[in-house]
Image (cartoon, rainbow, N blue to C red; front, side, top):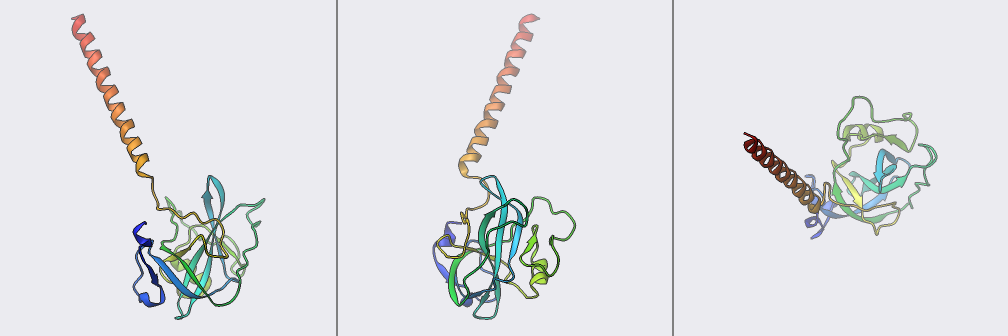
Length: 196
C-alpha cells in the first residue's frame, strides 16, 4: 500500500494491462454523473452507509469507476445527500484498487432497484454486473479518489487487514493461554503424585 505512492503513473499511458493494486495514478477525462452506483452495506466507524461509484470517461475512450468515498445511511435506504458532480474535463488522482467483496457471496442479483432507476443501489456487484448496468466495458479495477480531490465524500483509504500490533496482541494472548494450561497441567500432576 505504501509502495503504491512512490510514483504517480498516467493511466492513459499505462496500456491495456491492469496496473497493480494501490498504484497511485492520474487520469484525464470527465465524469458521467447521471449513472452513479451506490454500494450498499458499507460501514465507516461502525456506521452503516454506502460507497459512491461514478463512471469516469478517460480521454482515450476507456471508462473506469471512481470510488468517490463513503456516505452515511439517512432515514431510509433512498435518503442520501446530493450526488452531483461538477461537469467538464478534469484530471483526477487516486489509487487503483479492487471492487469490495463480501466474506460470503450469496446467490442472486446485486441490483436492488429497477433497471431504469439511477443512481443504482447494488450489493457487492461483480464487474460483469456493473458493465451490464452501465452498458459499457469498464477498466478491470476501480480508482479510489484521493482525499484532496473535489467531488468526494469520506475517503480514509487504508490497506486491508489488521495492523501488525493486533497480530502481536493475538500471539501474546495465545502464548499466555498455552503457558497457563501448562502450569495447570504441572500443578494437577504434582498433586496427583503427592496423593499416591
